[in-house]
Length: 190
Image (cartoon, rainbow, N blue to C red; front, side, top):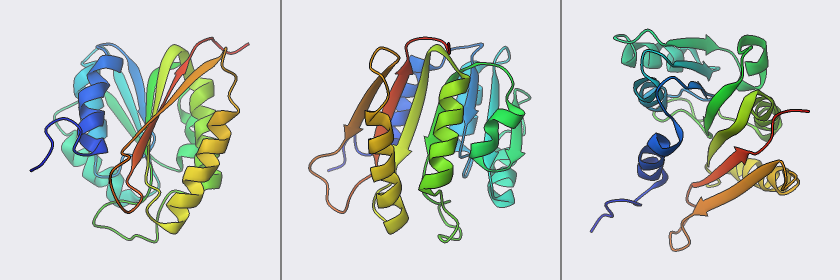
């Protein structure tokens, strides 16, 4: 039998995002992939909000653009997420990363710990006070395992008075299942 609420991180993400993303918010989808998260964010923020979407693959940008064809509250950028600070010049309320590789595409093109850490740093700088960073991590492949370890080490060093960091993961699933790291920024940049 399948679970209804916490079968996988995708269901958990879809359940939780409405708690963190409200109409009028400014958001970043740091890894648009097939566009599902970007579309969901666009719907949540409504016509008064805005979503920036990043991906290094034109295929991902095109797939996302097709899903958003009825919407106007977005900008898609075919560039690495580590460069988000060049394009997003205003503080944002929410940033999501869905790491790994594009489903049903070239698995050799995937996120890497070095550029992901740079992107996480950029996202934290862009977040407003009480903004949320939502990171879905896929440690089930070699690069994903390295990325996962690097993220754990990085987030463990964030000052508690400035950030709250929480991990949500399955403890009874095999094969290194994906998990979520959620960060709330407690204070604005000094």
